[in-house]
Amino acid sequence: MAVYVVVPVKKLADSKRRLSTVFTPQERRLLTLSMLQDVLSALKASKVDVIAVAGEDSQVEQVAKKYKATYLSANGAALNPAIEQAALWCKAQGASSVLILPADIPLLLAADVNRILDLGNRDGSNIVLSPSSNCGTNALYQTPPNQIPACFGPKSFLNHINEAYQKGINVRLHFAPGLSADIDDVEDLKKLFEIENKSACKRVLQQIMRNNQTAMDFLAKTKNEN
Image (cartoon, rainbow, N blue to C red):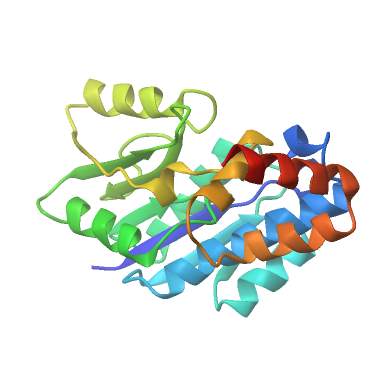
């Protein structure tokens, strides 16, 4: 069985706009790339066979190559169509299973990835989902691939559950702190300090804060609240 992973990355110019009150566009790009590094590092240490990154930026391509991942150009496609294109590529390459993971979960662990694989390979036709803290989807694993369409976005966890239910497909769930902690807004950044970790994202965030007073004030507030 060949397990492929797809990590979609939004265009860097559009990444993490909800953090624009704290960070500059360049700082948001750096945070996005650092989170991608954390995700790819966890995947490299896991039992997956092939890693594919779907994006639209040369910097994203460079990070993908650094981790020996295949880079797939999204060609301007929106998130879900880009994921579907990448999943079809995986299937054409011989994937028996495809795992979709977002690029903004810097606390992801290889153990969580392996647990998802174990849950998804227990019997014939399976889907494994991991929800985010706001009812989004931070992992979608399908054996075989393409049983349900990608429905990423607000409340996507419920949409994926509904798609599977309508088709009578068995769904298993995996809950883990590192998987639920996606970074979308200022409040989410607190998770990087609440959970012990040595992520690249946390290091980059601390470097940024040394030169960004607004971000530094946020860090001080976060530490006081903790």
